[in-house]
View 1 (cartoon, rainbow, N blue to C red):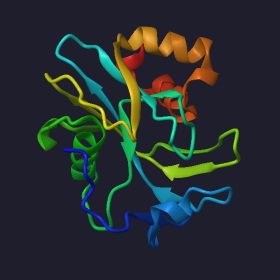
View 2 (view 1 turned 135 degrees about the vertical axis):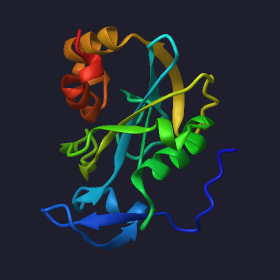
View 3 (view 1 turned 60 degrees about the vertical axis):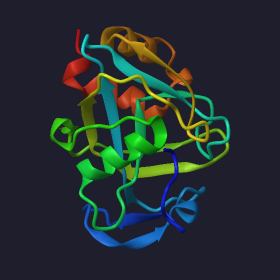
View 4 (view 1 turned 120 degrees about the horizontal axis):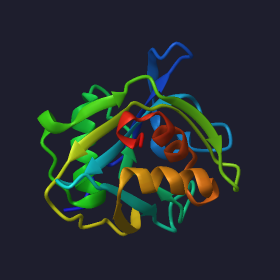
Length: 181
């Protein structure tokens, strides 16, 4: 269920205008000098309007152990972003999302952040929302734990204790309409 069928996961490199300029192995991109690349974030909601929040596994290279959005990932070269979202939901959380129900909410989101170890995230990262009726089955290499929260409570928590969350979550919930109370 949680296997990734790639010998070497690649990310799409971008120029400053967001145009594709090549690919690089994922493991070589997230360093102290991270090239701008394409990614995505997704917030998964349940039928009663709660949002799935996950805590990153302690073995993650960047921001281990912090709370973040439902999941993040990188599209494979040539892969449509919404299909990358569906693929990554299955890999990280064991969730089957319908591509039709995956919609982009912040298409031009971009950020750069440095974690305490010096690892840099430098991404153009469209933000998606999706819904599920299922409970996650987390991949332990990706997700330490999870919880469901109201959007308003998550936004307040990210404002009150930003150090407990990924920097992209704090920036995204401030911009997403579904988190405005």
